[in-house]
Image: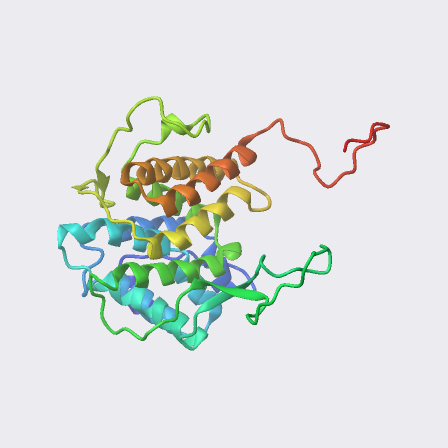
Length: 312
């Protein structure tokens, strides 16, 4: 591993710690150096030493090394999605993304992730009914959070969004262990993917007073590319990650600002595309943004108000 890192001109500083691998996850100098290398014009090529090192490192059985690779997923996915339209060699990035996808497929045994949602057509213990409802169906409905996974060995245009989306689902499952800078980088790429200026929604009014100004996305190296497709299978984990960034404990002000900016841009993009699902999701994130940024809202919602007046 050390030889491959040396080929990429990475100079790791000696770290005195009982767990040096975990320390690398939060080492700002190392992260900054790797990030700059990932943003180089040829960073995603198949013969790129850094991509090869990230791939081999994730294949190890050390969970801390796998977290180290996940820390750079926002940059890998962000630049990869932005460069797809340029038709440049991206086999190095695709190898890393496929490794993450295969790991999640194996962990889940290919099964889907579902959640049980109560069926409101069935009466419950806390409500009286005039007549018993005859229904042979079960009292719970299963909502699919993430569909079942099939093993993929290559990245095709029809699979790309799904593979990247599953990699982001894996990132979300470990997001509580990710450094703040990694989350900030993710929010910045979400804003670039949107390709729309969301400043008109800064006051969270829910309506635009002027037409949104479109902007071209950059591929991480300053090159302009066209509009980036944002299918639902890619955006679902994106919304979950942004929700965490807005409401996570011990909030970082810069992270909240970046995530709220990304939410506004994605809302503008969903309005531009007239995408009902995305409008509903981003609209909810806008309301969460208002809650997160409202500095005057110091009320404890769980506290019972002391009043002599009974409101009915």
